[in-house]
Every structure is written in structure tokens, then in C-alpha cells.
Length: 348
Image (cartoon, rainbow, N blue to C red):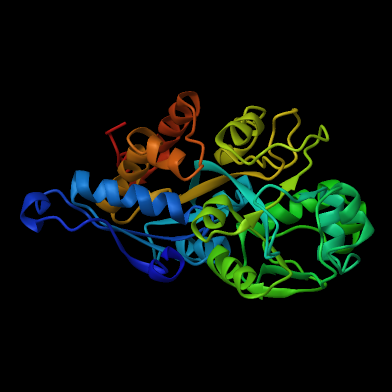
């Protein structure tokens, strides 16, 4: 199970060092567990193609931001875009990596994936402790014909500073005035009830462990861990499946030029076919590279992901960025330079 095996390791297939020794440059990254499955898969292909290894630590967005700010890794990864002021303060450049989706997951024997329906307000009330049993009338009203158990609900949340939590609580704040006024949104909010797990991996493990539990994870963790996902009513009141098509529909409304570093939030986007918990995840690098070879290799790695890694991303239900957005990203890389002022990457 990758949630145990891949917590921190060198990613990639084993190739002869002699083949790539002249050009291979190993790089390090840390942060988003949301993005970990696709970055891990890209790293395998990148290693095979170039000989360069990507050592990525799935430690959560908050920790990833701290590590790139302190220059202890070559790139950070966060599901919460930084503001222009935050980027300037730490001399960082930000660009999107990929688009994916969060799904609610439950441990309720007998319930099939995609069978249970929620609204955003019901999810907010569950995580506020206002709805405490699975056969509560508010849940039953959304799920006629579904046999709901008389069982306590155990909400599972992220115990670490998390971009997944940022997007989930942003969505709950959008749809629930009570949640917005009492809890709010952020990478690390004060959860009223429940139990915390570290990373998407930790939340997945706790949901699997406790019958009656509900959590929220990036969809690849749902499929890999065989967790039962639920549906969430979108802004149009429709219940769509969490798929490449519904994530793409939500991302289609994004104005990538609206914020520095293309920092958009994609939750609760309009459209009949939009998944309401769609997320763009971000990459952070230092604007001035003390180790330009490493900086160039980071950009080469993501260039590989944007082009040759499209099918790998789609196999994990991540949406590759459209060519028009990749062109904007390439242009933004001109500002990533060595200490002499020369752009570090000319391969785009």
C-alpha cells in the first residue's frame, strides 16, 4: 500500500548509473500529500527518461511551504496558493502543478461508492457536531432508499497544516454561514469535533480503522485505499460523479491571470457538471537559485509532467493543465534565475 511504503523515499526505477551519470541531477521536494500520488508517478517516468531522481516528502502543504522558504528543498508543494505579498516576502515563484478533486469518504459497511449524497451544509453540520448519527433526518432526506445505520459519526480531519483542509474549509465557509462565522477556513482550523490524522494518508487510515467515520481526501487515496466516497451537491444542486470531466468542468471557469502565481481556488465553481471540491495544487521555487542546476532540473521535471506525464495524471484522476496554461507557466519561468541573473532553464 503506497500510503505506508512511500511516506518518504527516493522515487523512480532503478537504472544503470553509468547511463545518466553525466547529466543526472537529483532534486528534493516536500509538501502536499494531495499531489503526492501524481508527483510519485511522474518521478518514476522522469527517472527512467533522464536518470535524475526526485526525492519528495509527503508532509503536508504547511510544512512544504516552510521548507522551501528555508531553502532546505529544491521545490515546495502546496494546495493553498500563496498571495503575491507572501511570494515577494520570501522571494518565491509559484505555478500550478495539476488539478484534482477532494471527495468525502466514509466507513459504512453496505454503502456503495457514490451511493451516499451530501450537501455542503450537511457536511458542515457533521464537522461542527450538529449532526451526530448516520440516520439523522437531514442525511436521510438526501438519501431516500438508502439503509442508514443508527451509528455515531466520527469526523476525521487533518491534524497537520494542510492545503486539502484549506480547500475543504473554504468550501464549507462558502456554503455554510454558521461554519464561516464560527470556524472559518485555513490550513489549520480549530475543529470542533472528531479526530485528526496526518496527511491524506493518515485520514485514509483512520477512516478505514473506525466504522462510522467520515473523512475528506484527494480522490486517488479513495481509490487506492478502497474507501467508499460520497457525492456532494454542486452549486447548481446537481450530484455529479468525481471524474476527470467534472474536475475539468470546474477548472474551466478559472481565471488563471487573476492572481500572482496563477493562484486560483476552484471549490464551489458554477456549472451543472462541476465537481464542487475541485482543487488546483501549486509548486513553489526560489526566484534566485543558489543551485541553478537543481532549479533547472525542477522545471525540467514539471515540464515532463505537463507533457509526457499527462496520461499518468489522468490514470490517477488528476486533470493535466491545458496547453494555454502551460504556456503561461513557461513564460513565468523566465523570472527564475541564477545569482548572475541568467534564467536557469532554457528547455521549454
